[in-house]
Length: 282
Image 1: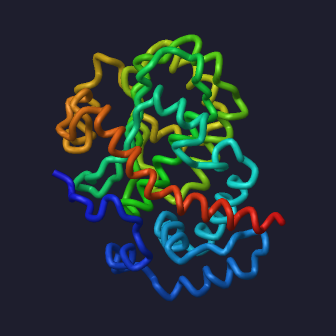
Image 2: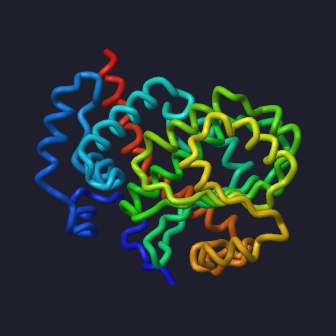
């Protein structure tokens, strides 16, 4: 059983993160603050955010600065991913009825944060690939703000119900953007992407994306057909999975509903961050 997370419905503070990671080099914060102050293209980044980036980069100062620059550059350029991150935003409201996802409120014994997503409706009328990825990014970011930095982040995506019509809505430009955001910008220590119930259409999408994915990231992607689910369960503990995946955490629908409620706690932070970024462009 993984460690339970306290204060699941409260935003983490910088002190919470420092308490969780006593080896964090606190003296590095002043250099990072000065880096932000001397970079007019960057917003006024709070300490909590600096801690998240520095932790994600294993306290390597050059890597942290590069990650911060990349994140906020993506933030400004990829508005379809980062603008108006609200559940009530019409396109997000539509996509959450088609995709059930959650960030596990418990961690694995190795302190991995697990993000689970499953396509639950084959109707593509309101399905937009960009918005599905926006919602996915919201879940990853919310997990950090709610549950704190994690030694690793692992993603589980169930593509059993992916259809040809979904594939038609995928475009290379969006694939390249999400790869850059996930691999170079998000303040996480990405460990693995588990794609389960692989079918013909996801194989086609992977073939499209492969030229744009680094070997390092591609090596982290694990594929499981329906016949290989036992192998998947051997590497991701049942304590962080829904019952539909053989887990003990509850039904996917109930977990998605609870996580939607927790997202409302993070929305004020999202709004403030969008405001701070906008001020750098005025």
